[in-house]
Length: 273
Image 1 (spheres, rainbow, N blue to C red):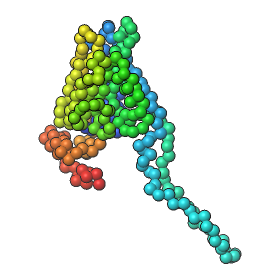
Image 2 (image 1 turned 135 degrees about the horizontal axis):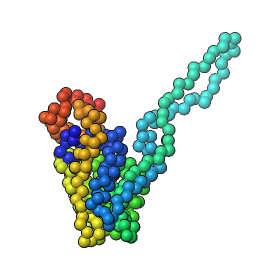
Image 3 (image 1 turned 90 degrees about the vertical axis):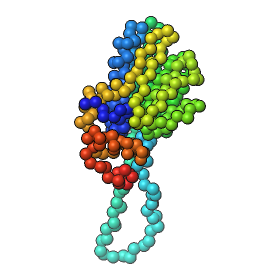
Image 4 (image 1 turned 30 degrees about the vertical axis):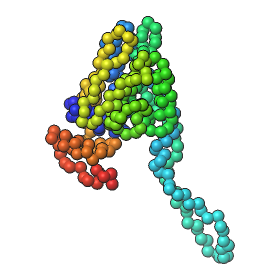
């Protein structure tokens, strides 16, 4: 069954679902592009690793106030009766746990020279929130933007801080940046919202070469079907991250008309209370 949404499916952004979507999309992009680019180019799946201590998760479970036990002691009257002190009750907290996060990306290399012609990045939540993951990604991004390598940066996540671009008044849910090495600092920014089709774009290559059209909409629809995400997603529930009020109304109407939502989600869930 294909995805029921005309563009991006917001349910695929769920924190527990997105890692699988990211992996699938990297593989399917490589599978789709490889036969169109050979024999001059090779599409390689690469892996970047981040060492983190879960900066965002540490915000949960830390007490607002730590009350230290009194260090003042008082003399107790002598007695033959043994009195047990009240045991101190522990509080459940969370501690920083080092974690290695692996993130895939694609490199299009010219076979003859082994030169990286195009880097294709699909952003993850760790890239869009403050912390080591964003710092490392921005460092790599800046190196690419300072070279002649083309950059394709795909952002299919509503939550988080978008990657910086200048002289743009586009504020949309999702973005695709196509930055050609020979045109910088100018670049093409495709902005689109939840009800919109995901725009197709040409994959930048060396001058004079035929550039294949990347159809993310088709790839995501096929992934949804092949991986049976329809068996995982309950459309009676609200997606995470939460939608704005206008988008919530649109999603409710869209799903109800297609008989994928059979009951109205309670107002308490809408308000997040």
